[in-house]
Length: 141
Picture (cartoon, rainbow, N blue to C red):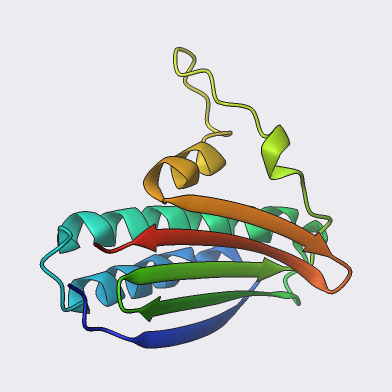
């Protein structure tokens, strides 16, 4: 059982050069968890992947890639519950309308939401006038 309780908020400029930093932070958090219930190295890899995918999407579609805007990431762990929220101020999208990628046809784009959905236990996306939030949840049991 995880004994870790933490909350980390990160705000980065809307520039893809920060993706590696975000992924590394996620990996280090996973590796520091006090748990025997999950493979920490696999969790670290998965968190790096889902977070960089989510933040890359937020950066690409937020406010026409304006570098003067930011993307906010909130990662919290309470007991065995991991929640990641990625906030942006872009136009938003309908997550339920994102199609499953064609696995037989390898394309450079279009697999991010698919990967996030498959690596996390639940994924939601909400649009509002004050911004958008992609919320991902993973049980650490």
